[in-house]
Length: 215
Image 1 (tube, rainbow, N blue to C red):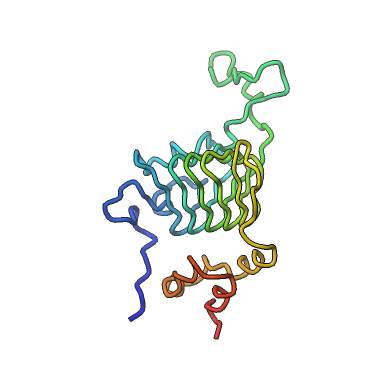
Image 2: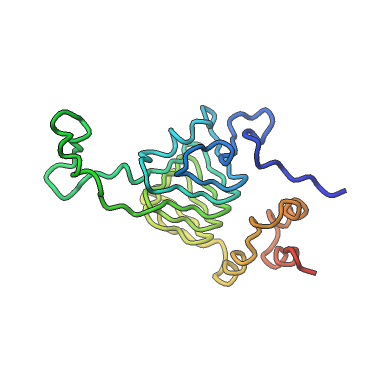
């Protein structure tokens, strides 16, 4: 009898563990897009992810997170709304205080931005990782605990530190290209279910051997 795939629409995928939530059925903001099975783990209130973990998100920049990503407790995304002017004597945002200062609101609108923050598929974020505005993190990457990611992270790269630096890549370039082409995260759920052990613990060659359409 074929295995039954997990359900990507449930909020709490682990029975008895309310600290773990799937983000796709949780998020409501049109500025946040999350793929299936990406989860966030927090013993306090994981359901507050949009307000506690996505900061200064006033738009129009988007946060896009792929499928099958694992976000450890305290993973935070700082969005472009956090920017202040840096080209004058003071960085203080006077216009937001109101009064006649609000007449100068043009001084804090249209600040330079780095665009959308984009996370690929199968990315693992360690405890208290922080991602700065406009960063792009490739599929298969690992972000070490406590890291502050200020620059783009390559596919299957491991980064750590503040600011985060590339420690190493998990595979050779040719294997990374093969993994991206295989894109196991886009396989039908029934096929993923049948080959979970290979996806988790197999070699690149073994993964290729069980790809859909392979005889």
